[in-house]
Length: 211
Image 1 (cartoon, rainbow, N blue to C red):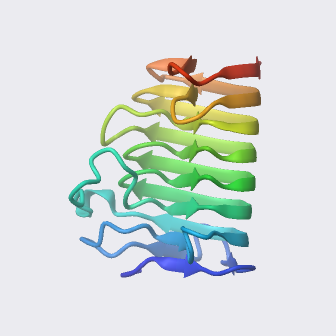
Image 2 (tube, rainbow, N blue to C red):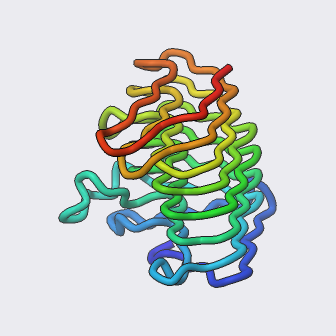
Image 3 (tube, helix red, strand yellow):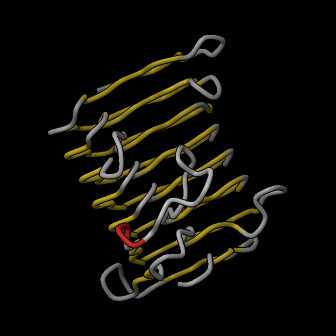
């Protein structure tokens, strides 16, 4: 993949299995592998299924101005209403494997991330997200980062295993917006912290159940 795959409304991208159909990012492009067609006005009903994503992290330089903003992600989705990601494995991704910004109705099931520079799964202001059966190993290679990192939004279920994160295994944060109504059933091993929940001044973090 030399340029981002931009998915339009109602697109389902299906492979023959994560080890059979692999989308690999060309060296030196520093782009996302997959994104949605209209990040400003948004898209609807996108699905990724039975795919492998290979980021070639060591060969993707940091673009100017992106020192603290996601680049070279496996999938970067903004303003999407209705997302399904199922049976997908992301490996060797320079930034975040799956990032959701201001999305709604997101379902992630049977997903693995291995060797990512930032997070395995991260959000910013995303509502109604279910993360089930997710395994994140070796997160935060590029700099200290959490395996699963939710920031702002309403309504989240996290069922995840985090192994070997340089930051937190599962992190809840009200930093860019308030975060409400979250259920976490997870396991974290060999991470700097297992679980954390923090809020910045002016935002709220409440109604959280952790097991």
